Length: 335
Image (cartoon, rainbow, N blue to C red):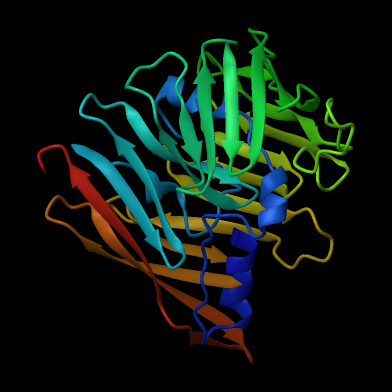
C-alpha cells in the first residue's frame, strides 16, 4: 500500500490496524503483463547504492535502508512481509529494494559477485527471473508461462532497451534519458510503453494469449530531479508529483506529495524532525502528526520503531493504536 493509503488510515481509521505493505502484485492476470525494465536495476548494481525517492511509501522513510557500520544485511519487516538489503563478504550488493507504483519490490542477484551482466530476480520466489544470455547478448525474462527477450542498446545520455515476446514480436520499448548528478551520469527518467494487440503464433496463426492479454499499450513516463549530492528531490510519474528537500546534514527535512488524482485526499506538505542521534522522531503535516519511538541494539542501531499517529477530530487529538516496524540486522562478525 502506498503512502497516501497510509495517511488515509491514520486520519480516518485511528482504532484499526491494517496491513501497510504488499510485496507482490494485486492480481495474477495484471501481474503477468507488467514488466520492469532492466536498465534501472543494472544502474543500482553498477553504483552499488540505492537512493531513497520521495514517492516511496511512508512506511519506508529515508533511514529504513541505511546499513549501520559493519552490517552486511538488513531486513525491514512489516505486516505484509519483509524487504531486505544485503551485501556479500566483499561488500557488494546481493539484494535490495525497488519501487513499483508505490509498492516496494525485492531484487535478488543470482550471479557471482562482480559479474559484468548480472542475472537477478524481482518480486520474491514467485516473481520474475532476469537471466543474461550470452548467446544473443541480452536478457531472457520469465515468470511461470510468460517469457520475453530484452536487447539493450545505446550509450551515453540515452540508452534504450527493446522487449520481444517468445515469437520475436516487439512487446515493449524503453528509453532512459540521463543527466549529470554529483559529477556522474545517472538515469533521470523512464520513457516507453509495453503491451499492445496480441500477435499471432507464426505456426498456427492463432492469437497468443500470453503476449498481451489486455489488448492495449501501457505507457510509462517517469522523471527525476537531483540535488548537488545526488539525492532525488523530485519524481513526476502517473502516480503524481513528489518532492523532497534535504538539510545541510543531508537528512530529509520537507516532503511534499501531490497525487495524480483530483479526488485524492492525500496531498500533503510534511516536515520531518530528527534527534541528535540521527533518529527520525516526528512527521508533521496539516492533517497528520506521527510520532516515533525506538528500540536500539548494542551498537546503537534501531531494530524496532514504534509509530504513534495523533489524529485531529472534534477539535481534539486522539492517539491511534501504535504501529511497529522491525529491522533485523546482521553484522560481518556474525556467522
